[in-house]
Image (cartoon, rainbow, N blue to C red; front, side):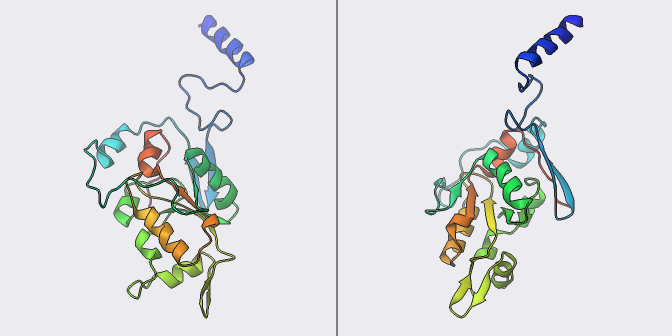
Length: 211
């Protein structure tokens, strides 16, 4: 026992920021992220056992038919920033916690209810289509900071958005991004997490079960 304690003391003295074998940090400088948004507390960490969740929600299976489940390019539009897991956590710190942006789960409700990234809001991809049959478009664009004008929309004061869905073969967040940009949304205010929920759970990140 003394030998183990001595090893830990020497190890941490030499490498004070090192992660021990039984710890899984987000980065070498960020063990976890706890935050509060919209009156609720959230925690993002790694190392939780997601094996049962993966087996239930994302069981191993052959690639799905393409189309519609085609692999998506990293770059959806010029100006739209592709991000990974660390970029997503940074987005929460820089935009969600400051009230300047939203982390958006673009999947339909049953997928969202099965588990999402902590702090995400659910805005299904089909809500972003500016069509006569979509009653949600105008209220949604207003909520995101858009202003209705005679010629369309003014998005100069719109929120920053980071959109995701199930993963690289999911076309829902790319479709939402295309609709936003085609409607006049500034692509430089949009970010895309291509890895989506599949990569999020694969790397052992926390899963939020919506109420």
